[in-house]
Length: 432
Ligand code: DLL
Image 1 (cartoon, rainbow, N blue to C red):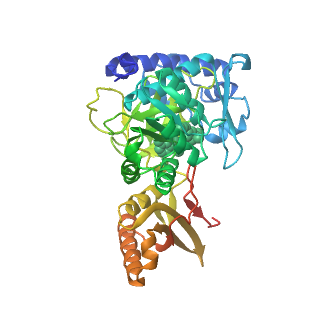
Image 2: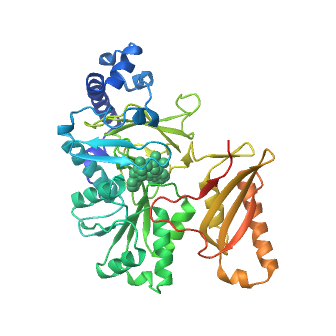
Image 3: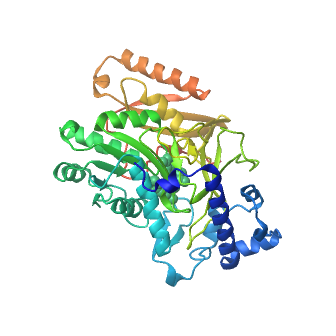
């Protein structure tokens, strides 16, 4: 049930003591080995050696994506390259790519932390895990792979894409757990249906999905279509990759591996901690990373801490599934809108399919948002009035959820592009 019970179920005071010790050694590591942090600490006349409490973290400077770009490729590494055994890179869809590195020990910790997530979701050495994340510079494939091997499961390193083959392998190899993005899981479920494969005939029991935001409604859709229990797991290359946090089988928030990551939730404007339980930006400080330690990395991901204890017995803080990113947040007609809000509404309306796009344009200084959503084939051959009724229902529900009016366009099934990795559902054509 636990991968490392002694760490996952630590008493709070013991955990905080461990965090403090690890924070002190991380600060020493970066203060002596990373010129970027040394300079910052000097400029602030920061005496990190006198750090006596975790609260002192609030004195520390932040690190942002641009700092990683400015230090490209190896400027933020805290060890010489000969100690680095692995390099990964984030794709850099916006701007220059960034590079992250791992020592042997980092890889060991990473494997353990991913094994924790897998174990928490209910997987054991008896499982056959199909890893349909891209293998390569993206941390998803290799990260999950090493964790799954660490667990002792049988790993199928199929990588992303070639969906029909995924299904063939799933049938032949009797895959019990599918690991990929939630978008790709939906894509696989649709192809399964098109191929006439009954999911009940598969051995699939678990789905471990992450790497992009998804809604509770999308989870239900995937669970039902694939006949599995899907759990969410979170991570980012800058602080490690997958394995930072994951849901256990209670599906009641993501358990954060706090013995390796110090997490804060801050108001993205004031950079002060939010009030208890409020939504804010997740900021992460690594506590054990050797090659690439990060101090107060601003993830841009929005979440909140979940109240209460989890019946599973893990004691670390839990975070709510990611609600969106500060940079994914659309401001339409001055109102903040997250794509996952739109997704939740669409998934709960009969007749629509779980495939949509959000298009935002600006005309005569006015924002206009259009939601394109695929609908059941039968609706297109049906009376126009039925289509109009559906458009009306979607429009009303969206405007009550979002507080703004949006246009709705129904499109035929399979007209919108499908995803094999992270989905891209927002097209913002405004030149802001
Ligand atoms: O996506 C690491 C990962 C791989 C996590 C596989 C889980 C599974 P990056 O490519 O650096 O790393 O992207 C990190 O993806 O800041 C979030 O915005 C988003 N993200 C990751 N996991 C989740 C999740 C990997 N479970 C960025 N829910 C992060 C929502 C997620 N967003």
